[in-house]
Image 1 (cartoon, rainbow, N blue to C red):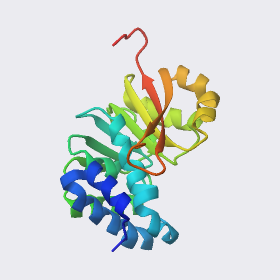
Image 2 (tube, helix red, strand yellow):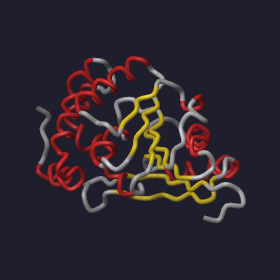
Image 3 (cartoon, rainbow, N blue to C red):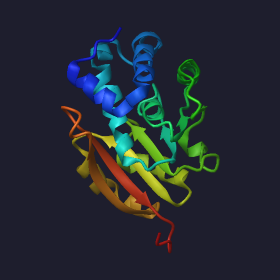
Image 4 (spheres, rainbow, N blue to C red):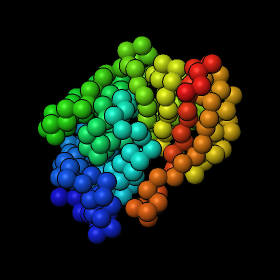
Length: 216
């Protein structure tokens, strides 16, 4: 059983509510088969709640109700599975090119009975036209200048990108500004999620995308 501190438990209860047991089972998957199959490093086990699951789950506050969310480069389900557990109103499509990761993700989805999740084995750029997302999420995929091209096209001209980033978020926005505008991004901002819940809140880059000439 992965240990959870009192502060982490308080945060997890607020985020996951009555689905906290599902979150605990997901963390156990990460700590056991996830580690054994190389989806997460063994040194990360003591930090699974703080650095990974809670860090990802708090971004749910930036996502509107009943959204279809595409999670690019889903890997170990961070943030995709965290969002699926915290927000049963969301429809999640996890996009992951590596077969071993896809197999693991599907096993976890089946075990947890997450009927709001579809796992898709493909690259983000090949999923364009196959996925019609309201929101695209990503964590630790690539620099924003490259990530913009992998995420924005999945919105089919309208929606939001919510990308988990570190302290370099503002700098990345500056470097990627031209690419983001070219792809249809009309507003890019840094949003901090989980300030009232986490010792280290999560920094997110939010890109609002609209079709040219569309005002709403």
